Length: 130
Image 1 (cartoon, one colour):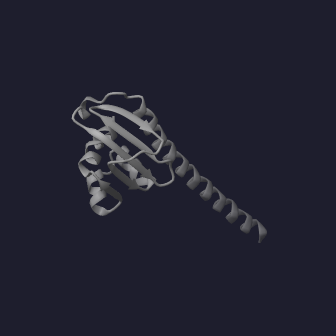
Image 2 (cartoon, rainbow, N blue to C red):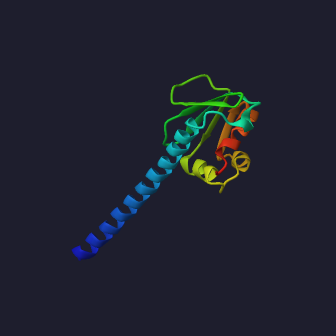
Image 3 (cartoon, helix red, strand yellow):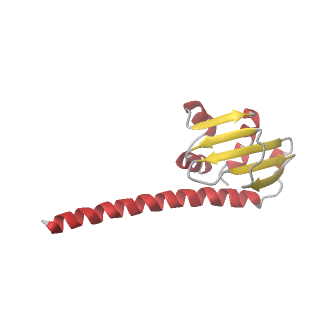
């Protein structure tokens, strides 16, 4: 009898461990995106864009991206944002991986956008899969 209970407990522990690994890899994917974005410097596609977008991704640190005519600054230091994008980590990674259209996600309510929506949309160019 105890052997069956022990086996069930081990299976449950394995599931919890795999869910934890999935969550960690999702957060790592998001952190990697912001870290790589911070090294890009200038993005010619954003030459006509200026403003600050706050990214509030559930389960990760908030990030602020300031665009000044194509020059990017990515920071964890709070600043006044012209646009705020909020969503859960899985939705954000699906957008990064090209599996989810950000506009469709916003229409469904999976991504919440407040403030300058045009600014938020312009930043989708830097999130497109490379």
